[in-house]
Length: 463
Image 1 (cartoon, rainbow, N blue to C red):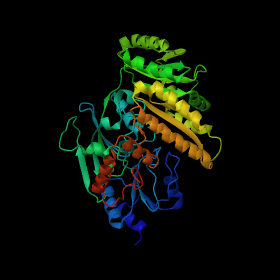
Image 2: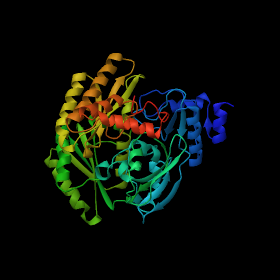
Image 3: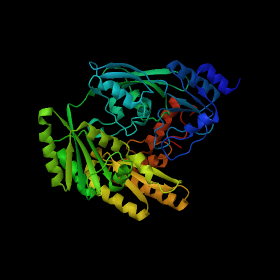
Image 4: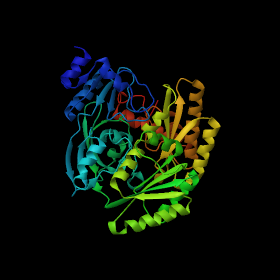
């Protein structure tokens, strides 16, 4: 019996082996081209996942777990002959409890679908990656995804109470639970979060939920220099206003968004800051006025505020589509957009932005900037002609210099996109910079405990 037939015995109606069905799984949202999987399996139960992993472990077959395929670092594409395990059929919202501030969901549930369900009871799951339309619970757990609401709520790790995960030998682990407190030995739940599918396959999670904000206003503040914008964010927070969202876009990104017709920015400035402020209905206008004065005092050439739901939704959609909008600015079929995803303490943003501008000029490359400025997260979207070796080398050097700039300012080489295939060398750079190379050794030892044969998502995070 061949492997495909044996896989079908485990998941009778969920095995893809034809070339046309496999091709989509050779790519994710990154610029990397993966290998053709030997098969794609779509289980619908934890039992099937367990049996599948046990079988692949016995056969020595590598397994790549996959959710929505929205990774920007190549974390969800396979090397040759691997089995791709798609969790998209495991998409049930099992329970929602406002009383317990918890929802129980399977790994294939999409983030927007979960929040649509939660909105019916006035609740919210805070992690909000730009890809939330396609991104899944399992995917954002594995990458510890962030998003627009990070400035207020933090990243995914802050919202996971427990997970059900399956080891490569088929063992099912149930870690954590639906309670808001639990101290029972080492925190293995947090170890799974951000592990990029290299330790276990997440099949279910208990996630924390919160009440939706009562009233929200959305502000657009336009600036002609990035340093003033950086100071403005700090000044707003220093004034006692804790924004729900604090995002920025540069001129190139604004132009790209406008080209899609989703939103029209008001004036021809170089940068725009998007702020969401939420308060009780009776006090919201007062806080909006205070924020407006602060922004103008820091150099904003215009500040526009709206509470119109349709207008706010158009702007929200435009910001979430910033990366895909930039893809329209590629000049040739060989062009790709590589994202430098660094994070620095917000207090260092003015000097870091100056350095980023210098690096762009030094390396003579084309870069668009946007990101979650409220928590110091900078997305440098680097255009590169993949057929031009000289340009690829310049981009690689820029990427390294960008990462080094983050480290020199007390930050990190990866804010929320993970390591995947793209940042393996940058991960080494960071721990070397901190003189903590032993930490990488400990990670590899942990990997060998969870996955002794190295079959789960090989080639990711480590060499």
